[in-house]
Amino acid sequence: MSQVHELWPFKTSSYGITEQASSRTDRDGHIERIRLEGFTVVPGGYTADELAYLAGRIDTLLAEQAEHAGGVQALAEIGEHETLRCCLAHDEAFVRVAANEHVLAICRQLLGDYIVLTLQNAIANSPGRVHHQTACHRDLPYQHFVSSRPLAISALFCVDPFTHENGATVVLPGTHRIEHFPSDTLAKEIERAVEAPAGSFLVFDSMLFHRAGHNRSTAMRRAVNNVYALPFIGQQISMPDVLQGRYADDPALRRLFGYDTKPVASVDDWWARRRARR
View 1 (cartoon, rainbow, N blue to C red):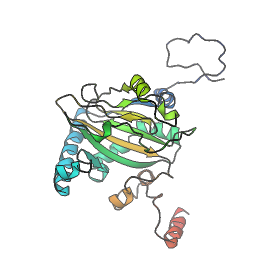
View 2 (view 1 turned 120 degrees about the vertical axis):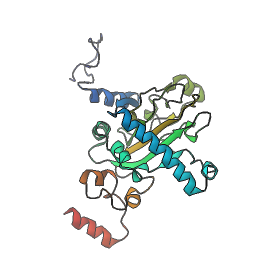
View 3 (view 1 turned 120 degrees about the horizontal axis):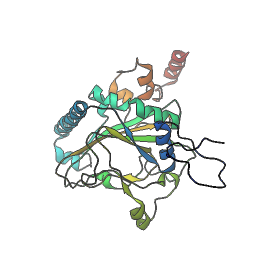
View 4 (view 1 turned 45 degrees about the vertical axis):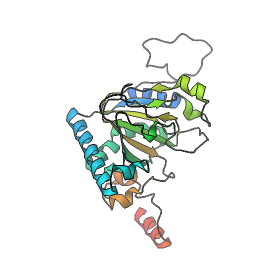
């Protein structure tokens, strides 16, 4: 029989129960909440200076991206004006976000030891604008099935605080365990805006239905979404190609960034990979 649930300060009154979850550590508690409700908030351990640097880099890189693409309007026409994709390719600070050990430990316990970062996108939710992420979705979109174990875990890093006023992410608890999207009436009844401090991660099953809130404040709300998945799920953008060999000599980052799961171009390349593994 499992241990008594230790998150509670007292033993829950019950009868007819012969099995119960055990939660001996903070990590156990986070994992139990992800399995049951689909989400949790995990402290990241970042300083105010680190957060200020990341916020500044996101703003700078978004401006550089707009200049490269021919202006903000050119990106707005394709819904990309407030999204910075594969940001770890631009600054090692984002690599450290992707490799956060608090998050990776939870992902490995839920998914197994072999996980691949399928995407890392910075999202800027400006005051008064309707970001395309305000539409309900799964981070594995267009999928209407569920599995007995998670396929992917999302970790939305809060560069700025997430509040009701500035558009905190809204989740539909438990929907990672149902195949279809609930009715509009029920979705409205059960949705919950998740407030979280700057420097924390909103970690959730990637099959959980969620959306960005509307930013009604006067300040930008920035976040960095990281999606970790089982290795058979493809990356949004090929990180080995974007990184051009960087971090390939680090065994942990090599695996995390998908160097060993990138499709090879020929049978000869497949044989070469096999030789390297031996």
